[in-house]
Image 1 (spheres, one colour):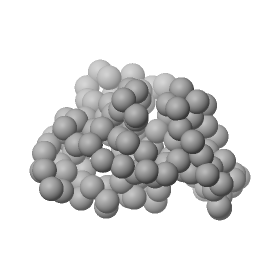
Image 2 (cartoon, rainbow, N blue to C red):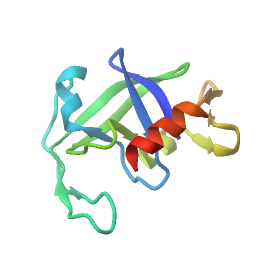
Image 3 (tube, helix red, strand yellow):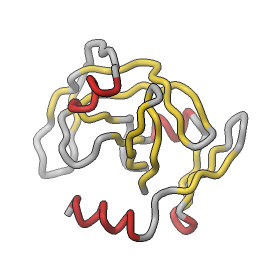
Image 4 (cartoon, rainbow, N blue to C red):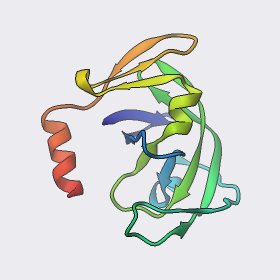
Length: 132
């Protein structure tokens, strides 16, 4: 599922991935979004056949806006060429968000509950074709 978000007021498309433990940002986006990194620890492995790569750094307490929700999250910066931003379990748990793929939506159950539509139909097909 994909959703358009804003990081520090700048638009970016995110993939919502319940299989990702953390939130990941493509290293190519750091400068455009005006983020400051601190040293990252550890490695990330995209899938079972890929080699693990080091985390380039972590952007802490990043202002993120998803629909009406505004809050802060941490983003681990890695080299990736398929997606710009991946929102994983860190984001979903912190924001008490439920993924509803059957209605192409996210349901945020935090202090201000809301339902956020995700990209569906032709937009999603176009993204998947590019990723394959």
